[in-house]
Amino acid sequence: LPSSEEYLKNGIISSSLLVVSTLLFYLLGHGRNDNNIIGLNKYLDMATSTATILRLWDDLGCAKDENQDGNDWSFIECYLKEHEGSSIESARETMNMLISNAWKCLNEKCLSHHHFSQHLIEACLNLARMVPLMYSYDDDHRLLDLERLIQV
Image (cartoon, rainbow, N blue to C red; front, side):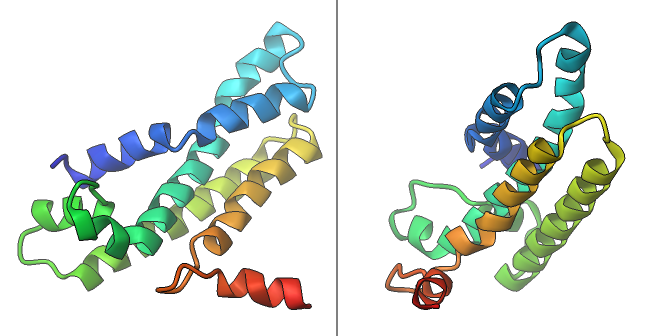
């Protein structure tokens, strides 16, 4: 198993959120000139925070499923191997702290980079906002929060 840090770095890339975010950057009219392309790196910092939130929420929501067949690693497994004697609860607390830190970073970057359009910033924030909803399903794989929203 990789270290939890290595796992998270790989998970950020393999989540494909950076690809989606790059497409949003261009679809919303950025990248028309060299100055805007340089801004892509600053925007990808925001997208990396969003991808971190996605990867960690995915592992929080799917840990039971992935452990069933033993073929998929999770942040929890990597953390427990790296920190022998730690509990699953301490791994979850670490994940929640990392999610909180990613949100702080995302909010700081969204507030400090005023050269991006409001649409681009909102798209990045909305991607992060939808993550908890996507992974808040119960043991029967029902999205209870989504079901409540649909009924409203």
